[in-house]
Length: 149
Image (cartoon, rainbow, N blue to C red; front, side):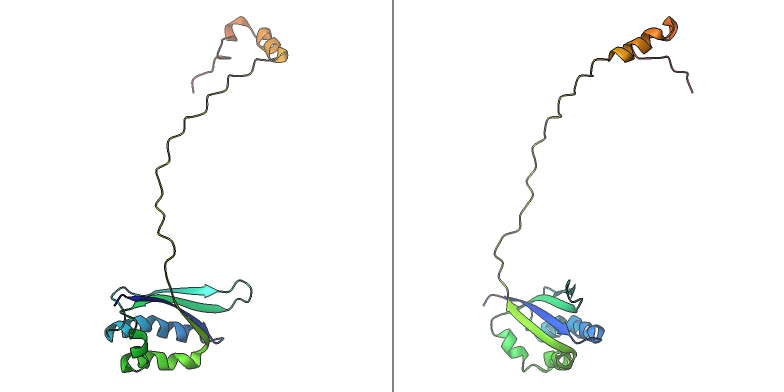
């Protein structure tokens, strides 16, 4: 039977977040030790609701097969973790998950040609008159001579 990926959302009671997290982090190791979870470790996220500010935890992991989650309810190793969790939670949501898109790989973008450099604007009459007013020794195409530093 194929593995069965799941997502569990744990909703802790106020002030019990740290205790619940400690148990959530033990859930996958216990399930794996009991032979019920795959060898791929669980991924656990801490969430904070943007509106209420309430904290939660989301866990992604996979059971070895369809029957593993049912067996977990009677397994003493898993029960040692799940039992103490219940009084710490306001609620819990369990969902079987299914990937609906494949990972997108970035394609190499074709190199774009650099935009053509704009030609410098023609000097205004005022700028021309300033250049003409300078002594001939200081007038050059590049502007006044600069002293070396």
